[in-house]
Image (cartoon, rainbow, N blue to C red; front, side, top):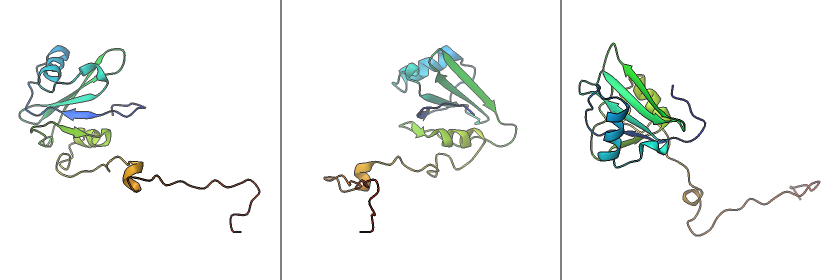
Amino acid sequence: MIGSTRSVRVFAYGAPADMRKGFDGLYGLVKDHLKADPLSGDCYLFVAANRKRAKVLLWDGTGLCLYAKRLEKGRFAHLWGDPPIELTMAELQLFLEGSALVGKVRVSPAALCLKCLTKATEIATIPRATAGADPRR
């Protein structure tokens, strides 16, 4: 698994990619077609036309990393479309394991937002307990 201690976004390239491309070719696809910065720290997923091979391009802070995987049985999920699909790291891991659900069913929960959980105009506060005080009184 591609490891990171920070929140990383994953973008699936919206068309079949030429798996002969290396660092520079995939860097160009991200810049020209996705209109994104390959050095942002986000992951970019590319899949071959036959969906047997996939590559992930990632800037780790010191250089570009290129991860490649070839499935011996089955095919990767179909993620092509416009706009590109954004995945979570958990969904990327499932995709690379060959899960057919990725891209069809949301397998990761949406990010929580405090405003979304409370009324939009007021923020809920939790009263603080005083040391030695009995909260039941």
